Length: 236
Length: 250
Image (cartoon, rainbow over all chains, first blue to last red; front, side):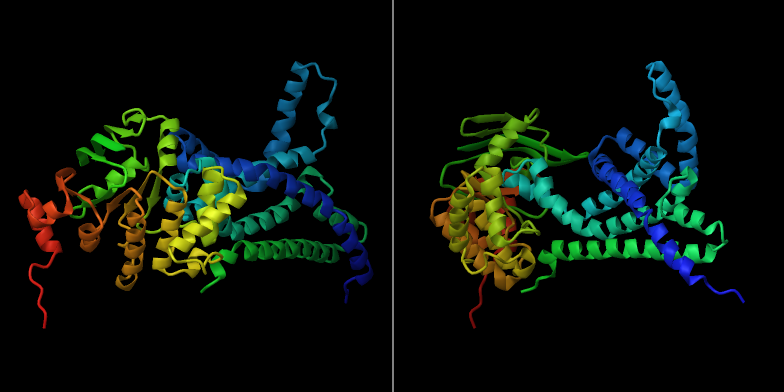
């Protein structure tokens, strides 16, 4: 009977782990882009004109209603064509083939996460009563200051569990980047498994690496949530 | 000081305010009485621009606002002169009592932090909460929260404070402490416009009563006029319901 090749597993674990920077880079870039944009979209959905709201809704249902892997394939195949046209029209010396596929990953995962976070922020902002804004106005705060100092800190407390969820989902979803032949966690481990057919070991390693990363992220969010929630948990 | 002319406001086809006019002088404690749904709260909310009135005019000292086309600057200018005490307190949930009072001073009025802190503490002391500076709203009783709400308003030294049914959300045993606080600041000469169902406050503290019904002012006068010799039948009926005609002492 075959047994697990523990030696390979040990080595492949670090090979998989060496892909973590790319996974994390995609995650961080996607979050940095989609947090402000998603917040802006959620404001449009809550206070914007009906037409803009409708456009946001269509965008969100497109993103949520289609498999991520198809979005990746689409962007990966369509973007180079568009990019090439653009480059040709600007007489650039750059070639489409020089573009690192990680840029496509940034685009896909940002577009995807914007849609998710728009809904996360929208529901969180809705939990803060409108009267908090009125109270802020009554003491002379501008709407902008009221959002910054009163409404967002309260909404963030409700948004955090969903934000954590979205972040861990994003981290896990970056495993689909193997389709872009990006050398992130999944692809590296799989490639390492190829010569000896040690796929089970490799998959277990991948499993463990994602588990490790996501657990750390969850822990961080829990800590932050506890800190933000301080004003609710106290009782007289 | 504050003059209101022909304010009109409708929600859909339902007219809530059908041409309200009155004026308030400096130092006045005016109480608006009236049955539920008579438009009292909507009137206050229109004056603080939480609701946009359909038409009318507000004259506040030298600011003249046509409610048909209000500018952001006018709203800001009027809010700088007013403060609002809410029925449901509406304290900032993520801020302590002291921070609640500080917020308007430091961010709204741009007063330096140190100076603002002294003003805020003085305001909280005045409402009897000198031991609750660091408490969050969730740690305070309803009456205490409303007193922080009052401190938040008086700290700004506004020209006028609007009170929107400040005791309606409170347990009966907590109403007293809030009314006493309001009475205290009224005695200090604060100009107040109060919507309330507390007849005792209207009788003892106010110098002007405005009786509203069905979106218009039915009659106004001093408490003495309104409570002892109301001219209008609607006022009489309302008071009869609110004030027990006979009191039995057993």
